[in-house]
Figure: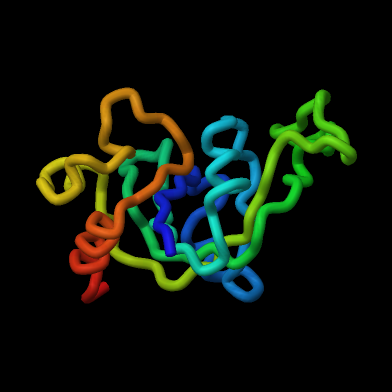
Length: 154
């Protein structure tokens, strides 16, 4: 089992949206970075843990716990010319972008980016590194365990 931090802008898809979705499951769409895509395509597996992170908002941070519940499949938004995520170079025969389905496990208190930065146990988290902008990053088992302990009572 592996662990991931997956960023979503709450006005696009929030943890509340996930928890109210049918089956508490949503497709993770719109990833347009090759390294993040490769994580979904090549490394993620059903059952992997996800720290659901709200980004590009007044107070970014971990807002919930989720899990990967599907293997990779072509992101449908790349084929839709009306979509913000449309990619004219992508074809059904050779899709460029990937989605996976993510299921909400529980909403938590917000573990803010500011709070995360104060915790020595998390200092090596990719999301806390200077210049880190990836929407999907790996989380070590030790980091996962620490975050789970912090959010245990929520």
